[in-house]
Amino acid sequence: MRLWSRLGFTVAAVLLVFAAAAWAGEDMAALRARAEQGDAQAQFNLGEMYRTGEGVAQDYKEAAAWYRKAAEQGDAQAQLNLGLMYYEGAGVVKDKQEAMAWVRKAAEQGDAQAQYSLGLMYSKGEGVAQDYKEAAAWYRKAAEQGHAQAQFILGLMYDSGEGVAQDHKQAAAWWRRAAEQGFAMAQFNLGNSYYEGKGVAKDDKEAMAWFRKAAEQGFAKAQFNLGLMYLNGDGVAKDKKEAAAWFRKAADQGHADARAALQKLQ
Image (cartoon, rainbow, N blue to C red):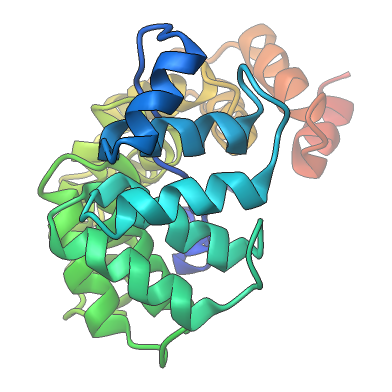
């Protein structure tokens, strides 16, 4: 039975994520008063409260309306969130092109989450013609600001040669940056890089260490690989009991190969 190899570029279909408000329990009446006076941060926060239903009845139309007021004043988080409302059709008529326009405004202001989101939309061809080169350029902008998902996906693009020249060293380097932030999929892929000696020198102990980090976060493919390494004695002393324990964790999440491996051990 073989280890599960690295995740491929298809996992780039990661969900877009809204920017979150940061208010310190401000009184609703005071917040609304500031928003109605034109305070962009208050308008964004009010939009976020209506979107999430925190402190008010959830109302996507109200959320979009308040996001728009802040977005039109140039608030990048509001521009991103208004774009994602258009992307999802929440409180507004679904419109991927309008989503793209608002997300771009935020991205051009340097908002890392918006840059990542714009890269994702270029990757998927949503609201714009599919363009992996443009996607890679926007992912890079976010990745250089420390955005872990963007770092991970940029690594995938280097691994597959989508939008950039194929470069396994660069792939491993970007995965490492995301992995060091605790991003489980990057930890898993970096583990595979070490196991296969792809982009880095082959090192079963390093592979084991990165698989363990992902496995301890509940990532089933990493749990399975960790089990196999214990079973085969790769990077660690052979230990069927430990192998079975990790196979069981993966099997409990529905991993078919882990179930088969458990049956063989019993």
